[in-house]
Length: 407
Ligand code: HSE
Image (cartoon, rainbow, N blue to C red; front, side, top):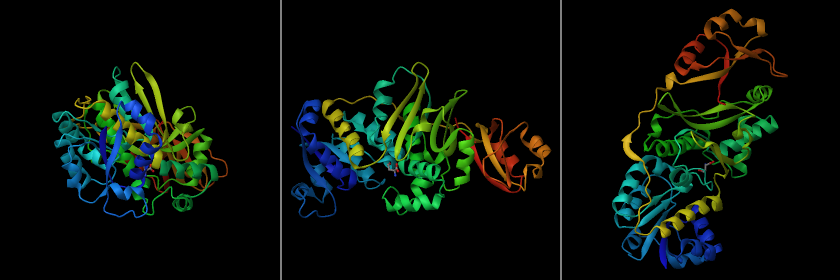
């Protein structure tokens, strides 16, 4: 029998207990051992819930119990989670977590400590919720040079953008609806400003490059400036608008960003709607692959966490090798990254925008007409460096919006 402890009895923590209790037999069989939840740590009381019998409030009880071989950290936030995880690894206990903030910030350090102590630190649920993506990157796609990882990594924003597209509704209206349904937090900043997706693409980029990528270095834009009219243009271009987190290696340099982008109906990520997430991977041998599923939610996330528990029980006393070195990876200069841009400019009619000015500034562009939209001119530039585009666009008045043409 292997004893485990669950830190945090919130949505994911209670999901972990439910997954283990519901699929106990099958999980034990696959782990090759009986998994016993010995403790749940939480500051609160849960009167009337059988969990109360194994509830502890003092982390030292877990830390000092040699019987506990796996610690499941599902508290969230960087501290005290990071300190608790570090202490557990140093005590020779494996740890698994769904905590993307902690993994993005301290992943390299925790992987090193786990290795030194011949235990494991796994974090499948930190990116893409229930979707297997970390384990495929560590264990399956080991023969490929991975040159691109692009994901819809945030369910809340994907739900909002999908509803805006389908209903032709404004961002604020759909956000309010998403909050009512519990899909969006009362304080939606981390999701709608792209911070959550940024942590996740930082983790994936670190893993693919084998080196620490600081999320602070990743250019991040959210979806708050996207309007229903942008979707009319997207439709005219046989495209959608998705919040994408992307890592690309171009001319030997690693680039990463999070931003809403136009994506063509020919790309598989175009078809990923509502709260679903997906991660598209390109390898030089593999070609294209995509991992799709529920990126959040109690049971899908808990399913990924428990899959780490099973892996850790299967690998007792042996560290699963993963390469994520602490030395910081310098990303390519964002200002030099090239994209095409959709530009929308206010104008009484198309002749009001001086086409010569546009040509002088952007070279040849493709003018776009969107049904029912008047008083503006829109065009798509050729691929331009970010820095050049930002410099040039400043000289135009009445710019309504600019959106990168992603794929
Ligand atoms: N707020 C996140 C999302 C939860 O909407 O995807 C999962 O990390």
